[in-house]
Image 1 (spheres, rainbow, N blue to C red):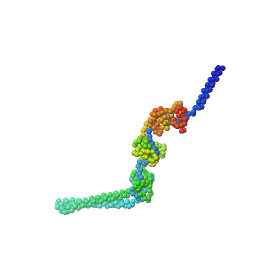
Image 2: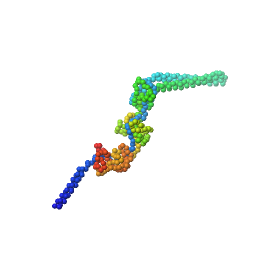
Image 3: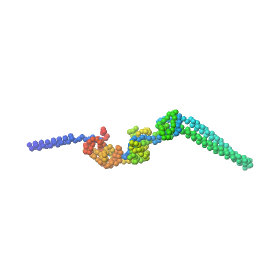
Image 4: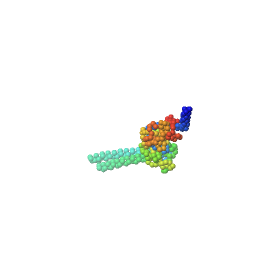
Length: 387
Protein backbone atom coordinates (compact mmCIF):
# COMPACT_ATOMS: atom_id res chain seq x y z
CA UNK A 1 0.00 0.00 0.00
CA UNK A 2 2.77 2.42 0.93
CA UNK A 3 4.64 1.53 -2.26
CA UNK A 4 1.55 2.25 -4.31
CA UNK A 5 1.22 5.69 -2.76
CA UNK A 6 4.91 6.47 -3.45
CA UNK A 7 4.57 5.30 -7.03
CA UNK A 8 1.49 7.48 -7.48
CA UNK A 9 3.26 10.47 -5.98
CA UNK A 10 6.20 9.95 -8.37
CA UNK A 11 3.85 9.75 -11.35
CA UNK A 12 2.11 12.94 -10.29
CA UNK A 13 5.43 14.77 -9.86
CA UNK A 14 6.71 13.57 -13.24
CA UNK A 15 3.49 14.60 -14.90
CA UNK A 16 3.71 18.01 -13.28
CA UNK A 17 7.24 18.47 -14.64
CA UNK A 18 6.22 17.38 -18.10
CA UNK A 19 3.22 19.69 -18.04
CA UNK A 20 5.47 22.52 -16.86
CA UNK A 21 7.92 21.92 -19.68
CA UNK A 22 5.14 21.78 -22.21
CA UNK A 23 3.60 24.94 -20.81
CA UNK A 24 6.98 26.72 -20.92
CA UNK A 25 7.60 25.65 -24.50
CA UNK A 26 4.11 26.72 -25.47
CA UNK A 27 4.58 30.16 -23.92
CA UNK A 28 8.13 30.61 -25.28
CA UNK A 29 8.16 33.13 -28.15
CA UNK A 30 9.13 32.04 -31.64
CA UNK A 31 12.75 32.87 -32.64
CA UNK A 32 13.06 36.20 -34.46
CA UNK A 33 14.36 35.99 -38.00
CA UNK A 34 17.36 38.30 -38.43
CA UNK A 35 19.77 39.08 -41.20
CA UNK A 36 23.40 38.77 -40.16
CA UNK A 37 26.86 39.40 -41.56
CA UNK A 38 30.12 37.88 -40.38
CA UNK A 39 32.60 40.49 -39.14
CA UNK A 40 35.69 40.62 -41.37
CA UNK A 41 38.58 42.86 -42.30
CA UNK A 42 38.79 45.38 -45.13
CA UNK A 43 39.41 49.00 -46.04
CA UNK A 44 37.51 51.94 -44.55
CA UNK A 45 37.49 55.47 -45.93
CA UNK A 46 36.38 58.74 -44.42
CA UNK A 47 34.51 60.58 -47.15
CA UNK A 48 32.30 63.58 -47.83
CA UNK A 49 29.75 63.78 -50.64
CA UNK A 50 27.87 66.51 -52.44
CA UNK A 51 24.60 67.79 -50.98
CA UNK A 52 22.78 67.80 -54.31
CA UNK A 53 23.55 66.52 -57.79
CA UNK A 54 26.60 67.91 -59.55
CA UNK A 55 27.08 68.41 -63.27
CA UNK A 56 29.59 67.23 -65.86
CA UNK A 57 31.34 70.29 -67.28
CA UNK A 58 33.80 70.75 -70.15
CA UNK A 59 37.23 72.05 -69.17
CA UNK A 60 36.97 74.57 -72.02
CA UNK A 61 33.71 76.01 -73.28
CA UNK A 62 33.22 79.23 -75.21
CA UNK A 63 30.10 81.07 -76.27
CA UNK A 64 31.39 82.84 -79.39
CA UNK A 65 29.69 85.97 -80.66
CA UNK A 66 30.69 88.54 -83.30
CA UNK A 67 32.30 91.81 -82.35
CA UNK A 68 30.40 93.53 -85.17
CA UNK A 69 26.93 92.95 -86.55
CA UNK A 70 26.27 91.49 -89.98
CA UNK A 71 24.24 89.20 -92.20
CA UNK A 72 25.11 85.50 -92.07
CA UNK A 73 26.47 84.51 -95.48
CA UNK A 74 28.14 81.16 -94.79
CA UNK A 75 27.82 78.48 -92.08
CA UNK A 76 30.30 75.66 -92.81
CA UNK A 77 29.57 73.79 -89.53
CA UNK A 78 26.51 72.39 -87.78
CA UNK A 79 25.69 71.21 -84.27
CA UNK A 80 27.64 68.10 -83.31
CA UNK A 81 30.55 68.75 -85.73
CA UNK A 82 34.11 68.43 -84.48
CA UNK A 83 36.25 71.41 -85.46
CA UNK A 84 39.93 72.32 -85.36
CA UNK A 85 41.47 75.41 -83.86
CA UNK A 86 41.05 78.53 -86.08
CA UNK A 87 38.50 76.79 -88.28
CA UNK A 88 35.79 79.16 -89.57
CA UNK A 89 32.47 78.54 -87.84
CA UNK A 90 30.37 81.36 -89.30
CA UNK A 91 30.98 84.13 -91.83
CA UNK A 92 29.02 87.32 -92.50
CA UNK A 93 28.54 89.12 -95.81
CA UNK A 94 31.89 90.83 -96.44
CA UNK A 95 32.34 91.39 -100.17
CA UNK A 96 33.16 95.07 -99.58
CA UNK A 97 35.86 94.15 -97.09
CA UNK A 98 37.23 91.45 -99.39
CA UNK A 99 37.53 94.12 -102.08
CA UNK A 100 39.35 96.43 -99.68
CA UNK A 101 41.81 93.65 -98.84
CA UNK A 102 42.40 93.01 -102.54
CA UNK A 103 42.92 96.75 -103.10
CA UNK A 104 45.40 96.91 -100.22
CA UNK A 105 47.27 93.92 -101.62
CA UNK A 106 47.49 95.60 -105.03
CA UNK A 107 48.76 98.82 -103.47
CA UNK A 108 51.35 96.84 -101.54
CA UNK A 109 52.62 95.19 -104.73
CA UNK A 110 52.79 98.60 -106.44
CA UNK A 111 54.76 100.23 -103.62
CA UNK A 112 57.12 97.25 -103.47
CA UNK A 113 57.80 97.68 -107.20
CA UNK A 114 58.45 101.42 -106.73
CA UNK A 115 60.74 100.61 -103.83
CA UNK A 116 62.72 98.21 -105.97
CA UNK A 117 62.91 100.77 -108.80
CA UNK A 118 64.03 103.61 -106.50
CA UNK A 119 66.73 101.46 -104.92
CA UNK A 120 68.07 100.41 -108.33
CA UNK A 121 68.31 104.07 -109.40
CA UNK A 122 69.99 104.92 -106.09
CA UNK A 123 72.57 102.18 -106.60
CA UNK A 124 73.26 103.42 -110.13
CA UNK A 125 73.73 107.00 -108.89
CA UNK A 126 76.11 105.80 -106.23
CA UNK A 127 78.28 103.93 -108.75
CA UNK A 128 78.31 106.99 -111.02
CA UNK A 129 79.54 109.25 -108.24
CA UNK A 130 82.24 106.76 -107.31
CA UNK A 131 83.39 106.58 -110.98
CA UNK A 132 83.67 110.36 -111.24
CA UNK A 133 85.60 110.47 -107.99
CA UNK A 134 88.17 108.06 -109.49
CA UNK A 135 88.41 110.16 -112.65
CA UNK A 136 89.15 113.28 -110.62
CA UNK A 137 92.49 111.76 -109.66
CA UNK A 138 93.57 112.09 -113.31
CA UNK A 139 91.84 115.47 -113.80
CA UNK A 140 89.29 113.88 -116.14
CA UNK A 141 86.28 115.04 -114.09
CA UNK A 142 85.53 118.46 -112.68
CA UNK A 143 84.64 119.13 -109.08
CA UNK A 144 81.25 120.46 -110.16
CA UNK A 145 80.42 117.17 -111.91
CA UNK A 146 81.56 115.20 -108.89
CA UNK A 147 79.48 117.29 -106.47
CA UNK A 148 76.44 116.95 -108.69
CA UNK A 149 76.89 113.16 -108.95
CA UNK A 150 77.30 112.74 -105.20
CA UNK A 151 74.25 114.89 -104.46
CA UNK A 152 72.21 112.90 -106.95
CA UNK A 153 73.34 109.65 -105.28
CA UNK A 154 72.24 110.92 -101.88
CA UNK A 155 68.89 112.04 -103.30
CA UNK A 156 68.30 108.67 -104.92
CA UNK A 157 69.22 106.89 -101.65
CA UNK A 158 66.66 109.03 -99.84
CA UNK A 159 64.10 108.15 -102.51
CA UNK A 160 64.89 104.45 -101.94
CA UNK A 161 64.33 104.86 -98.17
CA UNK A 162 61.09 106.75 -98.78
CA UNK A 163 59.86 103.96 -101.04
CA UNK A 164 60.69 101.42 -98.35
CA UNK A 165 58.65 103.45 -95.84
CA UNK A 166 55.78 103.53 -98.32
CA UNK A 167 55.92 99.74 -98.43
CA UNK A 168 55.60 99.62 -94.63
CA UNK A 169 52.56 101.92 -94.84
CA UNK A 170 50.99 99.67 -97.47
CA UNK A 171 51.60 96.62 -95.27
CA UNK A 172 49.92 98.35 -92.35
CA UNK A 173 46.95 99.28 -94.53
CA UNK A 174 46.69 95.65 -95.64
CA UNK A 175 46.76 94.54 -91.98
CA UNK A 176 43.94 96.97 -91.16
CA UNK A 177 41.84 95.72 -94.07
CA UNK A 178 42.54 92.08 -93.17
CA UNK A 179 41.61 92.69 -89.53
CA UNK A 180 38.33 94.27 -90.58
CA UNK A 181 37.64 91.29 -92.83
CA UNK A 182 38.53 88.82 -90.09
CA UNK A 183 35.95 90.38 -87.78
CA UNK A 184 33.28 89.04 -90.13
CA UNK A 185 34.46 85.46 -89.51
CA UNK A 186 33.93 83.51 -86.31
CA UNK A 187 36.82 81.09 -85.74
CA UNK A 188 37.24 78.26 -83.23
CA UNK A 189 39.60 79.37 -80.42
CA UNK A 190 40.35 75.70 -79.64
CA UNK A 191 39.49 72.26 -81.06
CA UNK A 192 36.13 70.96 -79.87
CA UNK A 193 32.54 70.06 -80.68
CA UNK A 194 29.81 72.46 -81.77
CA UNK A 195 27.15 72.32 -79.04
CA UNK A 196 24.78 74.96 -80.41
CA UNK A 197 24.43 77.29 -83.38
CA UNK A 198 22.08 80.27 -83.16
CA UNK A 199 21.39 81.63 -86.62
CA UNK A 200 20.58 80.77 -90.20
CA UNK A 201 22.00 81.94 -93.53
CA UNK A 202 20.51 85.33 -94.40
CA UNK A 203 19.72 86.33 -90.80
CA UNK A 204 21.22 89.45 -89.26
CA UNK A 205 23.29 89.08 -86.11
CA UNK A 206 24.06 91.96 -83.78
CA UNK A 207 26.46 92.13 -80.82
CA UNK A 208 24.98 91.88 -77.33
CA UNK A 209 24.16 95.28 -75.81
CA UNK A 210 26.18 96.16 -72.72
CA UNK A 211 24.62 94.54 -69.66
CA UNK A 212 22.09 92.48 -71.67
CA UNK A 213 23.14 88.84 -72.14
CA UNK A 214 22.05 87.15 -75.36
CA UNK A 215 22.65 83.61 -76.68
CA UNK A 216 26.03 83.21 -78.38
CA UNK A 217 26.18 82.70 -82.13
CA UNK A 218 28.13 79.46 -81.60
CA UNK A 219 28.61 77.41 -78.43
CA UNK A 220 31.88 75.43 -78.60
CA UNK A 221 32.97 72.75 -76.10
CA UNK A 222 36.19 70.81 -75.71
CA UNK A 223 34.86 67.43 -74.55
CA UNK A 224 38.30 65.81 -74.49
CA UNK A 225 38.62 67.14 -70.93
CA UNK A 226 35.66 66.87 -68.54
CA UNK A 227 35.18 67.39 -64.81
CA UNK A 228 32.38 67.31 -62.23
CA UNK A 229 31.29 70.45 -60.44
CA UNK A 230 29.26 69.68 -57.30
CA UNK A 231 28.19 71.57 -54.14
CA UNK A 232 29.62 70.41 -50.80
CA UNK A 233 28.07 71.50 -47.51
CA UNK A 234 30.03 74.28 -45.82
CA UNK A 235 30.54 72.03 -42.77
CA UNK A 236 32.38 69.39 -44.84
CA UNK A 237 34.29 71.70 -47.18
CA UNK A 238 37.21 72.72 -44.86
CA UNK A 239 38.64 69.18 -44.95
CA UNK A 240 38.87 69.04 -48.73
CA UNK A 241 42.19 69.81 -50.43
CA UNK A 242 43.27 69.97 -54.08
CA UNK A 243 44.72 66.63 -55.19
CA UNK A 244 42.62 64.45 -52.87
CA UNK A 245 41.30 61.24 -54.47
CA UNK A 246 37.58 61.00 -55.18
CA UNK A 247 34.95 58.67 -56.60
CA UNK A 248 32.55 59.78 -59.34
CA UNK A 249 29.17 58.18 -60.01
CA UNK A 250 26.64 59.02 -62.72
CA UNK A 251 22.98 58.10 -63.16
CA UNK A 252 23.70 57.51 -66.85
CA UNK A 253 26.30 54.84 -65.92
CA UNK A 254 24.84 53.40 -62.73
CA UNK A 255 26.93 50.23 -62.98
CA UNK A 256 30.28 52.04 -63.01
CA UNK A 257 32.34 54.03 -60.52
CA UNK A 258 35.00 56.38 -61.90
CA UNK A 259 38.27 57.42 -60.30
CA UNK A 260 38.82 61.15 -59.87
CA UNK A 261 40.90 63.83 -58.18
CA UNK A 262 39.98 67.20 -56.69
CA UNK A 263 41.14 69.94 -59.07
CA UNK A 264 39.57 73.01 -57.47
CA UNK A 265 37.84 74.11 -54.28
CA UNK A 266 35.94 77.38 -54.66
CA UNK A 267 37.38 80.15 -52.44
CA UNK A 268 33.91 81.34 -51.44
CA UNK A 269 30.61 80.06 -50.04
CA UNK A 270 27.41 80.11 -52.08
CA UNK A 271 24.56 81.59 -50.08
CA UNK A 272 21.40 80.88 -52.07
CA UNK A 273 18.00 81.82 -50.71
CA UNK A 274 16.18 78.92 -48.97
CA UNK A 275 19.13 76.58 -49.55
CA UNK A 276 22.01 75.38 -47.40
CA UNK A 277 25.28 77.21 -47.82
CA UNK A 278 27.66 75.24 -49.99
CA UNK A 279 31.11 75.32 -51.58
CA UNK A 280 31.60 74.27 -55.19
CA UNK A 281 34.18 71.48 -55.57
CA UNK A 282 35.51 70.36 -58.94
CA UNK A 283 36.72 66.78 -59.51
CA UNK A 284 38.52 65.73 -62.70
CA UNK A 285 38.60 62.23 -64.17
CA UNK A 286 41.91 60.40 -63.71
CA UNK A 287 41.51 58.43 -66.94
CA UNK A 288 41.00 60.54 -70.06
CA UNK A 289 39.43 57.53 -71.78
CA UNK A 290 36.53 57.68 -69.31
CA UNK A 291 35.43 60.97 -70.88
CA UNK A 292 34.86 59.34 -74.29
CA UNK A 293 31.48 58.00 -73.19
CA UNK A 294 30.23 61.14 -71.48
CA UNK A 295 28.59 64.40 -72.41
CA UNK A 296 28.64 67.75 -70.60
CA UNK A 297 25.42 68.27 -68.69
CA UNK A 298 25.14 64.74 -67.24
CA UNK A 299 24.23 64.72 -63.56
CA UNK A 300 26.98 63.29 -61.33
CA UNK A 301 27.85 62.74 -57.68
CA UNK A 302 31.27 62.92 -56.05
CA UNK A 303 32.68 61.33 -52.92
CA UNK A 304 35.94 62.90 -51.76
CA UNK A 305 38.21 60.56 -49.77
CA UNK A 306 39.59 62.47 -46.77
CA UNK A 307 41.39 59.53 -45.10
CA UNK A 308 41.72 55.76 -45.49
CA UNK A 309 42.64 52.84 -43.20
CA UNK A 310 43.49 49.57 -44.94
CA UNK A 311 42.95 46.00 -43.69
CA UNK A 312 41.11 46.90 -40.49
CA UNK A 313 38.19 45.23 -38.71
CA UNK A 314 35.02 46.74 -40.13
CA UNK A 315 31.24 46.41 -39.99
CA UNK A 316 28.41 47.69 -42.20
CA UNK A 317 27.38 51.13 -40.94
CA UNK A 318 23.70 50.09 -41.18
CA UNK A 319 24.26 47.73 -38.21
CA UNK A 320 25.48 50.52 -35.92
CA UNK A 321 22.98 51.76 -33.33
CA UNK A 322 22.93 54.93 -31.29
CA UNK A 323 25.90 55.25 -28.98
CA UNK A 324 28.08 53.02 -31.17
CA UNK A 325 26.36 49.82 -30.05
CA UNK A 326 25.54 46.66 -32.05
CA UNK A 327 23.68 43.40 -31.68
CA UNK A 328 25.65 40.14 -32.00
CA UNK A 329 24.31 36.57 -32.25
CA UNK A 330 26.08 34.28 -29.76
CA UNK A 331 26.61 30.51 -29.87
CA UNK A 332 23.25 29.94 -28.14
CA UNK A 333 21.50 31.73 -31.03
CA UNK A 334 20.62 34.63 -28.74
CA UNK A 335 21.22 38.35 -29.20
CA UNK A 336 23.93 40.11 -27.21
CA UNK A 337 24.31 43.88 -26.90
CA UNK A 338 27.87 45.12 -27.48
CA UNK A 339 29.47 48.55 -27.11
CA UNK A 340 32.16 49.41 -29.68
CA UNK A 341 35.13 51.71 -29.98
CA UNK A 342 34.92 52.93 -33.59
CA UNK A 343 37.29 54.75 -35.93
CA UNK A 344 36.81 55.93 -39.51
CA UNK A 345 33.36 55.57 -41.02
CA UNK A 346 31.29 56.36 -44.06
CA UNK A 347 27.79 55.53 -45.24
CA UNK A 348 28.84 51.94 -46.06
CA UNK A 349 31.52 50.86 -43.54
CA UNK A 350 32.65 51.67 -40.00
CA UNK A 351 36.05 50.75 -38.53
CA UNK A 352 35.98 48.77 -35.25
CA UNK A 353 38.86 49.28 -32.86
CA UNK A 354 37.49 47.09 -30.06
CA UNK A 355 34.29 45.34 -28.98
CA UNK A 356 34.14 42.74 -31.76
CA UNK A 357 36.32 39.95 -33.09
CA UNK A 358 36.76 38.71 -36.61
CA UNK A 359 34.13 36.05 -37.28
CA UNK A 360 31.48 37.45 -34.92
CA UNK A 361 27.94 37.36 -36.34
CA UNK A 362 26.55 40.86 -36.53
CA UNK A 363 22.80 41.60 -36.70
CA UNK A 364 21.94 43.89 -39.63
CA UNK A 365 18.15 44.09 -39.18
CA UNK A 366 18.36 46.06 -35.94
CA UNK A 367 14.98 47.77 -36.42
CA UNK A 368 12.98 44.54 -36.82
CA UNK A 369 10.31 43.92 -34.20
CA UNK A 370 11.50 41.62 -31.42
CA UNK A 371 15.20 42.28 -31.98
CA UNK A 372 16.60 42.98 -28.52
CA UNK A 373 19.21 41.68 -26.13
CA UNK A 374 18.44 38.14 -24.98
CA UNK A 375 16.01 37.35 -27.78
CA UNK A 376 16.25 33.99 -29.53
CA UNK A 377 16.89 34.35 -33.22
CA UNK A 378 16.89 32.45 -36.47
CA UNK A 379 19.87 33.89 -38.30
CA UNK A 380 20.37 34.09 -42.05
CA UNK A 381 23.30 35.63 -43.93
CA UNK A 382 22.85 38.35 -46.48
CA UNK A 383 23.71 36.02 -49.39
CA UNK A 384 20.89 33.53 -48.77
CA UNK A 385 18.32 35.99 -47.49
CA UNK A 386 15.27 37.12 -49.37
CA UNK A 387 15.38 40.53 -47.65
